[in-house]
Length: 259
Image 1 (cartoon, one colour):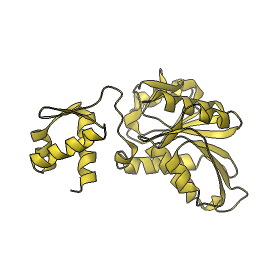
Image 2: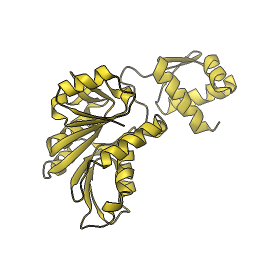
Image 3: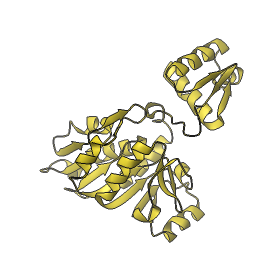
């Protein structure tokens, strides 16, 4: 197992449990305790966990796993969701994309759509996610608009008041939100309040709002609210979503697509 794969596995276990012991982690990952101690020390140096005697704990309830370690989670579900979201976008539209692993897949699904191969532009994409802008910038048929702001290393997103000036001057046909939590009563949410504020502005500038979220994100709450559920037009999720969860969203006036 490579170091990156080990680190991802350790962080996944830590997020799931809140606390991790060296011996337990060594047994689960089938490596030596010395390797786990070294990994935990290095992750602590990057402020991705708090080292304790004999193990580690997360920073707190708002702990957020950096984007590069979340990419493999529910990958097939995210790709199906992304294709379904991309199919909701019409040629020539202006699309807002927030950061996140699912919205990154949406960007990739848009990039390979045959009917978006030409145009002037075929699509306008507004994003505060540096990784999404980087992937789409090589597509000459896409007009890419990047907000200003300060980069968050966890999500590659630009946040802060510098982005307000750009978003205040544009209108969007659709905003696609990647979220960490979406609940029919409490709305869409993110871990970080600055990230949530930029995502909220994207919603306000859009004619319609689509939430792209796998079923593990549904019925959950997170620290920073993005928008109320009634502001969302469509939820695209995977087929593992519970029927009761679908019913609650539909009762809130949201169209649910399970793919």
